[in-house]
Amino acid sequence: MRALPRALAVLAAVVTLAIPVATAAPAGAATRPKTVPKDAVEVKVKKIVDGDTFDVVTAKGVTVRVGLLEADAPEQGWCWYENAVARLSALLPVGKAAYVLPGKERAGDDGRYLLYTWTGKGAYVNGDLVRNGYAQAVAYYPEHVYTDWQFAEQLRAQSERRGMWSGPCWAPDTYDRRDALDTPPGAGDAALSPAPVEPMDPSPAAPGTSATPEPAPQTTGTPTPSPSPSPSPSGGTDPRFQTCQEANDAGYGPYRRGVDPEYDWYVDADSDGIVCET
Image 1 (cartoon, rainbow, N blue to C red):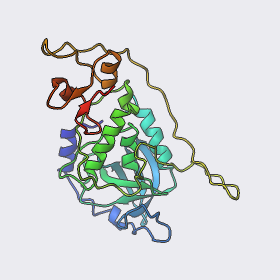
Image 2 (cartoon, rainbow, N blue to C red):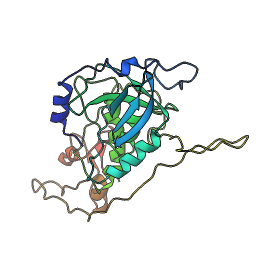
Image 3 (cartoon, rainbow, N blue to C red):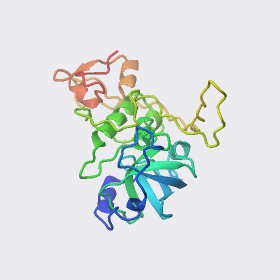
């Protein structure tokens, strides 16, 4: 994952996005899925670079390197890197259409334009990676239209222990930002269900049936030993665990906001004022 200070420096760097992506024509109404924003432009996927970066070709034949805005996948050599690459490859097959939403983003020193992206069938790619634990939500200032939604999906991924949040890889906890969310089109109502992906080589469906997308390739990270609880900060509180599940398994919880100091140690995923419900 790219560190946030570096990402901010990159955004402050060089040229504006207006150049290559803006040369692509807006997606036609006849072919664009209904979930793709009207201002999005159609491009063709040329190459998957890593778990959050890919090359596209615009309508005028210009090759552009795109990074997923507010979705930062593990770097090569980190656990869950291969999973993220496999998921992005399944969502954005090489040679297929995709849609990107141009904005005021700038190309950084790595040559990437950070953009919201949709698959050729209209599934929201940035949210899919975060929702399923293959990428971490990252804030780029000023905030963008789906920033709050990205962080809310990360909270759901954490509470469900998806992907990097399942144990082999841990990332710093975020905070609950689910007030007044602007949901991206193509994200779907079932926020915890993986978004559909296009088959790499789709076969025609039999009459009266529908084609089933190929599942994204999966690999299993090496499990780590169960962590021991951290010592209590004072004698009047319970031991501190990494997750509510571990606290429950040890016979502790629930904790209430404003009553139990242990409440502040855990993520209140449903914002009901109670964590580690048994």
